[in-house]
Length: 52
Image (cartoon, rainbow, N blue to C red; front, side, top):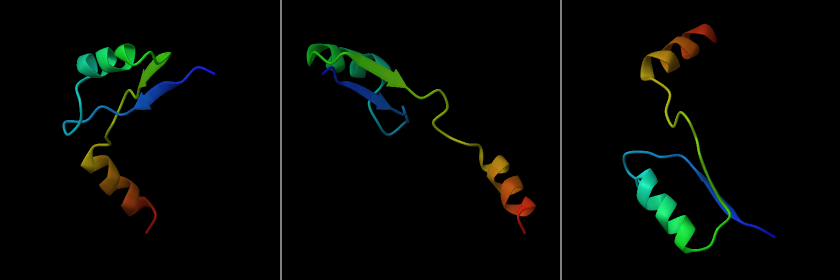
């Protein structure tokens, strides 16, 4: 079985390049990065008002 990593990249975590190197060094088969790790606050406010 092949294993990999799937994660969100945020300002509090590891950057993509060092993460890619770490994944490769450990012999893992894949690295999947989420495209949008956050939702703008204004968009959340709009959603909350729609469901009131």
